[in-house]
Each structure stands twice: as structure tokens, then as C-alpha cells.
Image 1: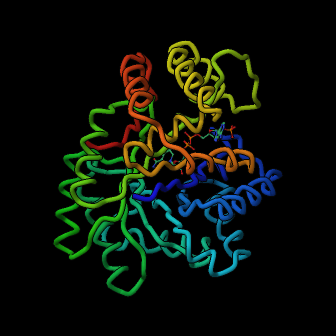
Image 2 (image 1 turned 45 degrees about the vertical axis):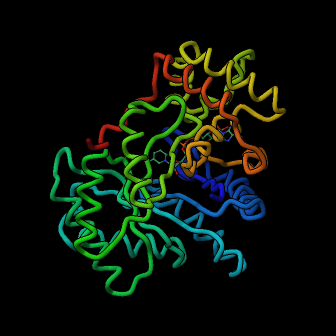
Length: 320
Ligand SMILES: NC(=O)c1ccc[n+]([C@@H]2O[C@H](COP(=O)([O-])OP(=O)(O)OC[C@H]3O[C@@H](n4cnc5c(N)ncnc54)[C@H](OP(=O)(O)O)[C@@H]3O)[C@@H](O)[C@H]2O)c1
């Protein structure tokens, strides 16, 4: 199976967590151009990446960059967005307006439309209406694939059957999946269902927001947002052993810690969505295409990850 890696663009418009600044948009253009040169074939965004005055900024930037991309290159990549099932987006037409808005911002290149999170916990009917809405749009001739996100195994099985009744199949599921992801047992159940049904599994936050890239032996001070700084401080000590192990493997192979953490996702057949906003990160991550973890390395990482007491926060909307 061909190894695939997607580029995540949550930071291309999000201020609160990622400290987005429009002054750095040229870095993002460079990042985008470099991914096209280096074999990445999937871009993940969402209509909620950028809110308020920055509404849909990540999608708008991608749309702008797509406009500058030769059509042959454009054909080789998939653009995936996520539509948020906000409480006011209800009924079988609830996604019409946001779908057309995203399509416009993305300059008519929209290959996968994903439900950003499951509403099963608080309004199970809402997501059924919205999925019907996506099926209707496909029946009207809009050419995109359907994806889900933040979904648990029980609900996933229900929704696969629901879509089958509309003669539609599910293309992909994206869940938090990394060495520090919470509830990995549940994530492995989702993974099994995806494998049985030929559904792509996208691993989001594969670097645990960058925590897995922190050198265990150096004091680095980066200009992060307040929340991200606080998170890093909180996680440094409990993740020390795991980061030491990542660094050891990285040094033995002359690669980066980031590459090892991403290859842990690839080893298991998932498609990691790596958040990148600098050309240098794309160059580094593209080396993951050139090597694989071996079984011993994977087993050691699994053991240390299991014993790591602090895991990333759970997405509160993820269903059972
Ligand atoms: N469905 C959902 O609910 C959901 C939730 C979260 C994320 N996602 C998707 O998954 C994507 C990725 O997840 P994420 O953005 O949360 O975080 P991530 O991929 O775990 O971490 C991204 C951060 O890691 C650092 N990094 C990246 N490459 C690096 C390298 N080669 N060396 C050192 N550091 C590196 C960068 O931090 P600096 O730039 O600060 O150096 C980058 O911003 C998102 O962008 C989004 O598309 C989806």
C-alpha cells in the first residue's frame, strides 16, 4: 500500500491556539508549494479554521493558492474540508449554505466533505439530517466523497449502514491518533471497522500539537500562544520518557523526532494529517516517505506510549 501523508491547516487561520498572523501568509504559500513538490496529495481544512473576522481563513488561503496551481498538479491532490454541525445547522438543508460557502472559498476544488464531529451525544438526529443533506448534494451531481470525524465505533457502524441505505459509501474517518492520543483502545476499534469497510483512516494531531517534537534534552523557548505554552509546560515532564525514546530512534536513523512519531502512524496503515506552516517542516516530514519503522522500534514505542500516564485531552464531541 502506498504511504500517504496529508497536510493539516488548522493553524492557517486559528489565533487562539495557533497564534495565526496574516503577516506570515507568505510562509504558508511556501509551505503549500513545497508540499506539492514533495509528494503530499491531501490537504485537510475546515470551515471553522478561522472564526469571527477570520471566518474560513484556512479555506480561503487554500483557495487562493489553488488558483495559482497548474491544473495537472491540482488534479493530483485531494482537498478535504470539514463542515461543523453547529446547533443552528439543522435539517436536510442545514449544510447547503456552508457547503456552497466552502466550495466558493476553495475555488471549486472540494474532493472530500467531512462532518467535523458527531452530534450523537446531544442531538443524534441532527447528524442524520446533515448526512442526508450531503447525499442529496451528491445526487444533484456535486462530485465529492463523504467523510466523518470524531466518531466512535458504535456510531460509525450505524452511520455506515445509514449511508448504505442511500447507496453511498464512506470515504474516510478522521480521529485523534498519536502516541499520546487518549482512548487508543477505542481508536483501534474505529481502525478495525475502517479496515473491514475499506475506509481511509486519517490520523489527526499525529505530533500531539508538537509536544512529540520537543527535544527531551534541550530547553527551547518558542513563541507560542498562551494555551499552547501552558499545554507544553504541563506535558513536558510526563512525556519525557516517550520523547527520549523518540529521540533515540531518531538519532540512530539520522532523522527527526517528528519523522519517527509520524511513521508510527504510517506503520499502522493510517494517513497522518500533519499540521505544517513552514517550508522546513514540509522538507523534514517528506523524508517519512523514504523510510519505515521496524517491528522492534514500533513495539518499544507502543510500550512506552501505553505506560505514559498523561494523554492528550479528549475531544468532548467524540461519540461512542
Ligand atoms: N477533526 C478534528 O477535530 C481535528 C482536530 C485537530 C486537528 N485536525 C487536523 O489535523 C491536523 C494536524 O493536527 P494539529 O495541527 O493539531 O497538530 P500536529 O500535526 O500534531 O502538530 C502540528 C505542529 O507540530 C509542529 N511540527 C510540524 N512539523 C514539524 C517538524 N517537522 N519538526 C518539528 N515540529 C513540527 C508545528 O509546530 P510549530 O509550527 O509551532 O513549530 C506544527 O504546527 C490539523 O491541522 C487539522 O487539519 C483535525
